[in-house]
Image (cartoon, rainbow, N blue to C red; front, side, top):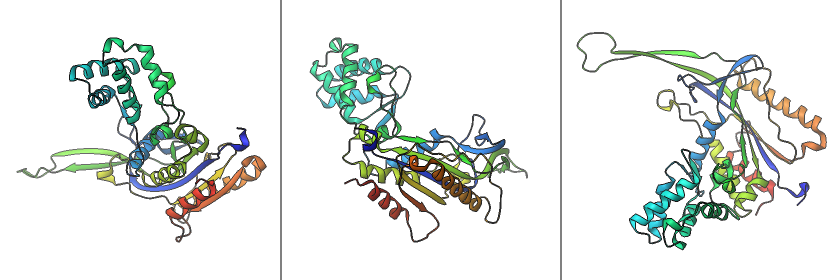
Length: 344
């Protein structure tokens, strides 16, 4: 297949504003930041928002993998299902888990766990016959021709001890950054004892927070997703992923600072050119409408200029804007993105 026949990428440029929040904490509990264009910006790491998206996908009906250090338990349960005794299952699962991981998490689908248990059954659940190289070969067979866990296909997998199980990620997430400079603020608080006999607080403390309009950039490589997941179900995968992007919000301090603000504006482009992320090198200045209106204008301006400069190499197939027309719902956006891909 030549480059022209490859499926396109979908780029999501999202603006989302949050009032008092600490969506993603650093090692001392403060909101994460980064220096961009010479100014401190609020930041939510890509890992943080990816996990929230993955958790949101669980409610979409998609088949999901399991990311765990307890892979031995998965193998054990699958061996029991296939008729192994408790002792056989324990010994086989211990050995197979040891061959695949040390002290790391393994991202694995239920069908892959079943395949490893089937391999143990082929060896009569005799742990002595489970040779290391054979286990690694099972790993290679288990992921071919297509994996059945959407989250593994989206976010990829690296297995240091079994490289054949590696899966290239189809989705790329940037760190979400504020489009404007910020300064973290301090929330000083006290707590009262319900049973106290003397006036005064029983506890004092402080928490850092900020407020920001975030720019989020996410791309989805449909060709890579097809290679991992298979073409069947690709259209539905786009819906599930897009909905999860819309719903997912990092969970840090949600009970005390409740960051529940939805997307404010999004540009979603289907194209075949090189990926294009907006750097927001120049911090947006507050105007009428706070930072949001200025951020939308800056985002549109940047994409329009780059589209012209990239010429035919921009490779745009379709472009959609969400957030300004109140009659254009997220359902409509996702439906039109799916239609533009020509997937059945």
